[in-house]
Length: 118
Image 1 (cartoon, helix red, strand yellow):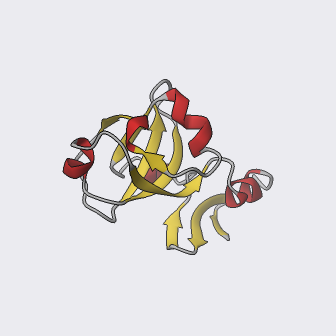
Image 2: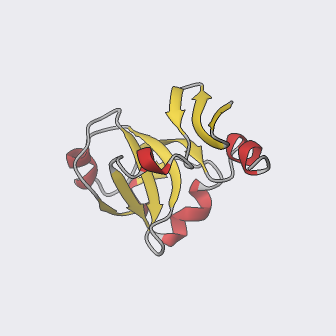
Image 3: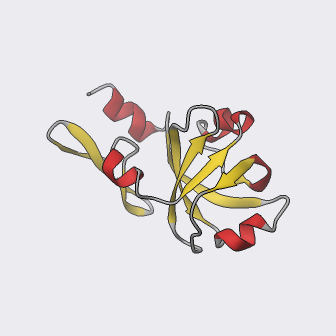
């Protein structure tokens, strides 16, 4: 369920709790950022969890459980929000495995519901 402020879908209520939507640019810009390769984009936009090989770079350090914005490497566009399964230092030392839970992404049911309204 999305909550609108001045016609913009800014807040989402999900199974994980209340989250900003990908349209809430003021909040999204302040989140720790993970850059993924273009090969991972389609999978993430279909709801896949983020695996370590798909990550190209990390922004600032973050802790396990932090909300992250996932952006593509070509355009730096936000494509998903995720919850870190571990801190960034641990993630950087890994070569494979699931590292971020995908909780909201371009193309999910919530995204589709407010894109058609806006």
